[in-house]
Image (cartoon, rainbow, N blue to C red; front, top):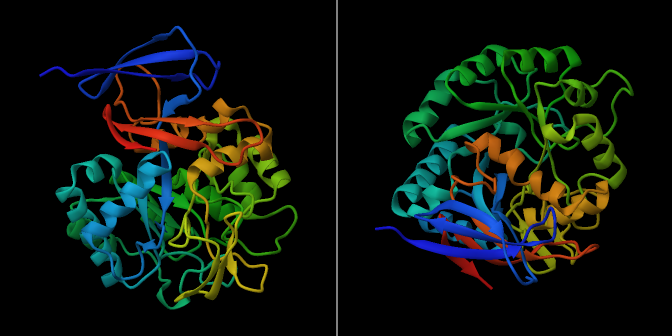
Length: 383
């Protein structure tokens, strides 16, 4: 049975009102419309790195299919229509259990299956060193094992589609090539690698840099270091956390320019305390953690971050400010560019799935205010 609907809003690139015709969940037509609209309309956001949100933690050992469903609902409320649940360094049994639960959530809840194309495993083969390891538990950092990876896939019906690792780990280059041969994306991150190791990893098939500029030592050689190497290597697309806390504005702007707009992606890297009211929270990792009104999540009384606290809709607006981007450019970093990693999502063109959002925004505002979201043309969130 053919179902048809129409969605109106301002085109972020031109400011003009457009009407989108949706038929059977697919964009069938886009044309200029009469009248004015307060809200913009754009593809839903694509977030490649989500650890948790609003008190829900994918890595706390208490994950259930219902909690995955609730997390997906929260993502819709901030304009995200595609996201990669992200599992960090942990014992193999914990990773397998979380993968099994996420796979079950996809089976039980069709909209979760629509939103979650695959899972991002960040670790466990990262740098064991303080600094580049970040908040990942040192006790569970280990060398890559193709046998372990195959057990992940067997437990989850092949759900792992992105793996972040440090290329200096023993056997990492062969591991990268093996994963790429299996159709899995490989990202470099939480690393202290030499430039040579970065370039070898890219030549083996690594195609992404995870939250470039973070998960790194506080001081580095000024010329020969893994940041310059990743910025310079055209095989690598870099993801950035543009929340105003993880990267200073000058750093972010320079990195975007160096990497090139086509090879840049925004991720939120949100943790469980993201979206929570300001205050102090006792956490298993980090102890006393403070959430501030501006979305910073940090270890109380210190300058150290304890995760990311702002959703992707805020990262887009802050990126626009920090790098002097247009709204359309900022959106592209969180829609079309990451969409290439997940099968070509995040585009407002005829013939693609109608995963869309409406939002309001004005220059200087540090968040896109999402008012409505559609999955396959069905309205699934409205404020």
